[in-house]
Amino acid sequence: MSILSGKEIVLGITGCIAAYKSVELVRQLVKHGAQVHVVMTKNACEFITPLTFQTLSGNPVTIELFNLYEEKEIGHIALAQRADIFVIAPATANSIGKVAHGIADDMLSTVVMATRAPVLFAPAMNANMWENPIVQNNIESLKGRGYHFIEPDRGDLACGVQGQGRLAETEDVLDVIMTILSPNDFNQKKVIVTAGPTRELLDPVRFLSNPSSGKMGFAIARALQQRGAYVTLISGPTALAQPRNIAYVPVQSAREMAEAVNRHFDETEIVVMSAAVADYRPKEAAAHKIKKADAALTLEFERTSDILESLSAQKANRILVGFAAETQDMLAHAQEKLHRKKLDLIVANDVSRDDAGFGTDTNAVTLIFADGATEELPTMSKAELAHKLLDRIATLTGSS
Ligand code: PMT
Image (cartoon, rainbow, N blue to C red; front, side, top):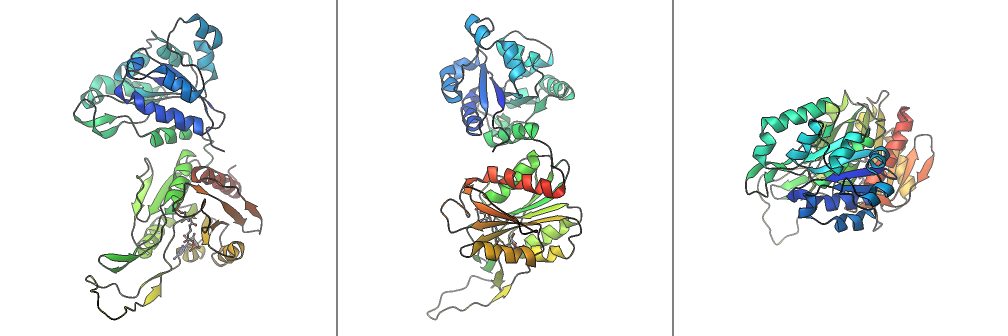
């Protein structure tokens, strides 16, 4: 179940071209099980219709301050009290300025003023406006009063210039919402997560690898960050965007991954190895591209070092979590790895299924604990599985 499930979210939309991006935000919030109540400024309605948000959220959209029907059915005070979080995305310089100076002259600014829920601003504006000291002062003043902000991205802006001012990506806004609403049960815990495949070079243009997309490991890193942990994400090559606010260490080979894990291990309390690390590498990588010849090519491989197994010798009271990607006798193989690598928990992953394993958005796994207990989990999104896994790790660390 998502952190957002059953949460009441008031989404304020102000007058900005980025208002169309809030459509996807509403879709995602609803998908996570949240109740979304949209409040639009009149200017926002110039960019996108309330009907779009009403249809997607399944709730009436509020615009007018003095609408007798809305006041009876919802009421701005009720909306303010009911919210678990108030998100303003996109937030214009004008809306930020109004809240910073206590101006409540429309429905949106009035509800923000009346709420005791956490408020998150996701600003979007022209780069010069963003850099304007008046806007920055307003933001600092609001931050000082406990309001949350997610900075806009850099890039091409609708006004034709380049710079900082693009509304943050939906996935990043969702991450921050979840962070604010999360139980914070990994508060300041230092965690290493590994993700993705490794590449073992045969020559400068060819390598031995596997289809890991990094989705599982990235989902775990994001979930940990949302729950208050300091995460170091060590990842092989993937097509995924680097998550915000997570220390990211890109690596290529199993050797580089081992070095990166060892560099961070001393200060780490929990290690989650979801990376698909190569067990073998070519004994020698050719310095130049191997030329084709008529004869068959024979390559010799040598073992890579087992990162998890080597960590178990220095484990102390750290929690070590491994994954086992299997195509047959899943439980037996996973149990053998759990004992050999002295793990606290192993996630047995049947990668022969269509809805699980490499590259999929969902996963279906069985958790096996050091005391022999097992827990079979149904198919769920990798983000949901990440949180479920963290619930179990929190029990092991005694922080739940
Ligand atoms: O990235 P995705 O597309 O989302 O796919 C997710 C996944 C299928 C890669 C993931 O869910 C998964 O199963 N990861 C483990 C893959 C794997 O390498 O399993 P293994 O059974 O070969 O290794 C067992 C454990 O030892 C793993 O935790 C692995 O990280 C670790 N290992 C393996 C080899 C090695 N040299 N050093 C290690 O530490």
